[in-house]
Length: 252
Length: 315
Image (cartoon, rainbow over all chains, first blue to last red; front, side, top):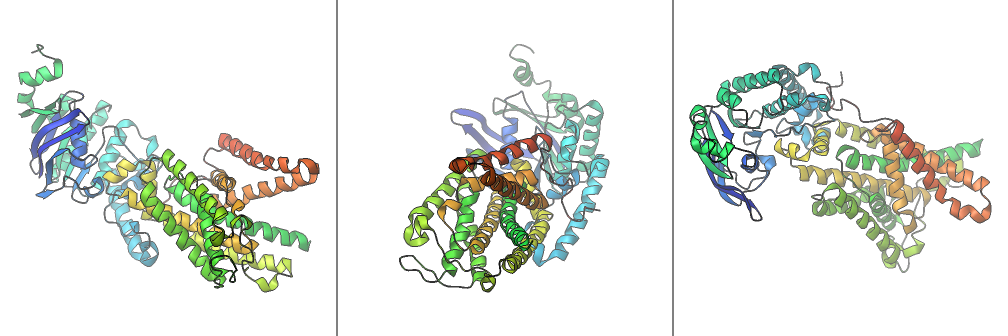
């Protein structure tokens, strides 16, 4: 599904990601863990196209996407959320969702006058789809409110919803559990599992090991920009190298 | 009575000309968040383009092609829009503050070209004898002004209708998404640069049209009309009327132009002749005070952006 081959990223002299390779198989929920500053979010930004790697290649479903712009990745089926959610704050939830639909005729300037009927048809269909997703995420009653009223956890749900509008095949989630209250955390976990059952692959950055254990079948551990370990979550947390990386040498 | 009617029509034509320019700025700033501080430059491009195409042949100056007025009105937005697309392709990757500095510089450069390229622009003396719409009625000011008001009102209405459709379309929604968070918009598959260039070019084209309409109504243009004070006025109009709202852009234009004209008339009536020139600066002060007061009491302007903008979601 997704393959990262010997990818490195350095900013000047700082090697943030060094020679990382990993594979995410179709239909799985894969975790990416590691201490702060390990390079997890940078690796996400490389996969999502927000940053370009200094070396290495990234393949999505067999096609090389290493240097393709960030705005082309969702059309290829790769969606992402952000560590600190980035809703369109002054836009309503429903319009946040509609903005995420792909290949809209009405996004072409002149189509709005030349083929208004087609634009209208797509808008109605997308609005229906958006409401169904908001319903699924428990945000339907806020559909007509601006996104700035949402709590941190709700913003994470909205970001997930926006990505769903594009019918992605793989979703990158950056810390879905950070700063989310326990009740909402359960809601997020349930939704991720449900979306996964529908055939969507996940790659998830997370610090909360309980959440990782509940969601992920396989985890990669990143430390100081390098891949340190990988395996089942319960094995990885017992790996002395991983404990060292998290807690410092000697803690094990 | 007829004098008042003639003046009212004259006032409204000028105010609507500003309204058109303000609609252009609304596309750029209100919808897309592009900080264009070079409004006057694009207005000038439109005005000079149309003037060169439509004036009679002039000795010592390029052109005077004597083409019909309507052709000038079409060419002005095209040239202003093309210039903006070119400038946008180079500068729109800049962050908001740098874009502001760049557009400010570009507007000054355009004004200096107008001032110094005498063989093209007539230099400091400007271009006169710009053909006016309904020129045959010029000796009857009431009818002449009303006819122009009808024409400019019609153009404004058409433009307003067209822009409303765009604002409420998926295209307009992408602009707002980019304004709110460009990185997120990119991650959702939107080519932010392409949309920003489109919005910049469209907005500047509209400013160019406003410039042409103003030039043909007055019949004379000079470089001193297109200075930063004009940019400031148009910004004040948009912010007072309500950024992100096309109705607000038009309302702000009429109100601010009204304040400008009224304060000008009051100063002329009550300030002794020897202080007139210095007192003129108070006009800008009045607008500044109105702007500051409004931002305290209604930070989103008189008519702010609507909560739900997209069509088909209104009911």
